[in-house]
Image 1 (cartoon, rainbow, N blue to C red):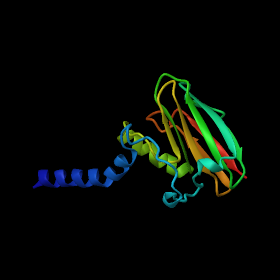
Image 2: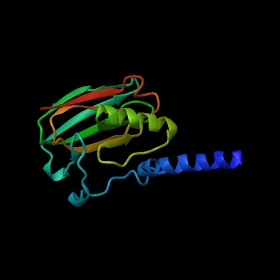
Image 3: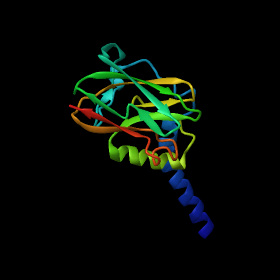
Image 4: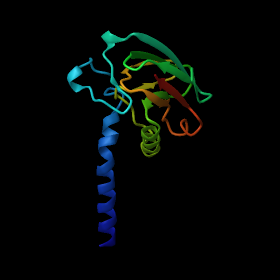
Length: 165
């Protein structure tokens, strides 16, 4: 009976986490689809942006020193921005936009599922030497973050800030 309970508990835990794991998918699923305004979801820090409405492009470099360059950007509320993210390192990095709490929660999830790849509009999962991009509309003023949530990277300080004025 104890073994059955443990198996049931493990299965329930796995099922609770599966939607998060599948939301990231594999590399084939990580490819972005064309922008569709009817599927855009608002978040506490904005929403996926329409590439046709980009008013500014910001280049961001990710390095194996566990740092972003630049580490801080300022954006006007309402702007749609294209982040062109380059991984100049030799290990996988990513840039994920979010609130402090959401990024901390996601970093913990990444520790459990380190092979997750991302396809959400606020994320770019970038192999060494490659480039990715995020198109985002910042609809709310505030101080938000971007981070690399690969296991150990967030904890090593691979975090930046976005000030939306």
